[in-house]
Length: 265
Image (cartoon, rainbow, N blue to C red):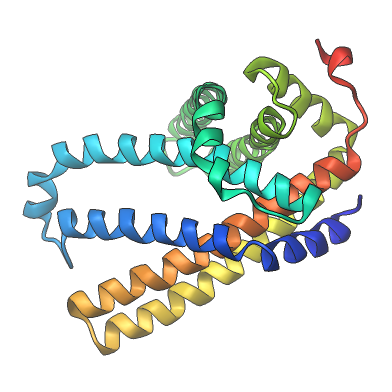
């Protein structure tokens, strides 16, 4: 399946996934509203310092909750693609079923990303330091290293993300799913690049429009009302684009991948 066909399928699946979108929007809204009550509107530096410990606890919990939700989301989207029906009664069961596998893949991906960024930051700083911060050549070298790091992080993220989908749609183990993600990326390298670049551009545009109107509202009204409406707006946008992105990627995988599991293992 081509990139444009996958986008078209993503929109079709999104239109048939109203109940799932509402569930995700509700989750986004409740968690964001909870964070707002902790942080407050326009918090002062002193307030941020005072709640730093609380935030260090809340952020990992929210991240784990989202990873937990992914199993149910991916399964529901996969069911909509295959049968044109979403079985929300199995949502929590699928969240539980795939949680450990998705957590393992995210931990591996996080570790790889951290190492990559640390290496890139170190080499960038080293290049700039060699020129004393004022040498055009070494500053340019530092910029090139930083650009290479960004591109490398993007390329590494693709098989890691795809591996999460394989863990669900093929009920695969974490390592096997990661290997399939790598194999798929190699098999259709440029199609993968095109798909994820187009998704990034599309989601960035939609998010920018939402943030633009949110900023207008904040500047016009301000206070808690604007903050709550802004949360509702962003929760809705993120709910729609989250399901659309998942549907697009899964459609692409189902229509393109030809390497069998036994060939990976």
